[in-house]
Length: 184
Ligand SMILES: [Zn+2]
Image 1 (cartoon, rainbow, N blue to C red):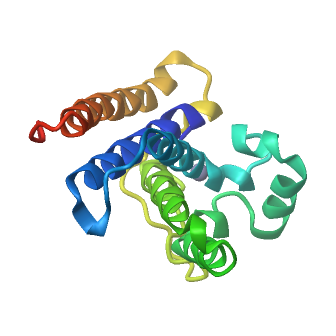
Image 2: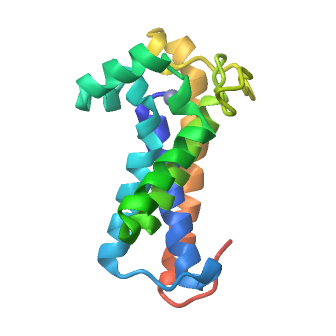
Image 3: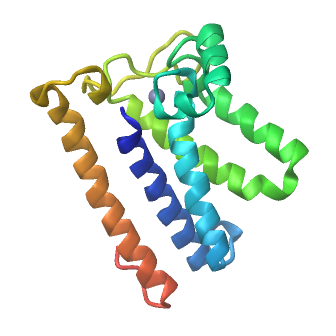
């Protein structure tokens, strides 16, 4: 999937985590406005980060040296698209920047939506890397690889569904933050 689709997954995670905190779920307390902002940024950043292994991706273009290194070492949709990658990232943050553990977790949840969305493309993802099993749910073509309108339509439709979900989650979040009952 392209970054436009992935980032909507990050928005969904931002809304879910903010809502969960507002409800006091998982031992969380309601987030302050700056913390809500940070939560959405962390989730959206996480949602596009796994494509750091693709120099042509939006993420890869931001840090080309790291991107080429990751691509050269693991290949696109390799290690960076696995659960192990997320676990190692989170472990390192908890170990060396423990105060950022919450945002690291949100980042990893955003990245998990990236892995989930990529499962809808034909190459799938090596979720259990280094085990060479690729997990795939559907065979939607990635929008960036095909420029004809017809070929791009499936991802556009997928994005539309996620967009509707985002709106519902945002409305639910707004209701919870305003002290009401969850709408969903
Ligand atoms: Zn990807």
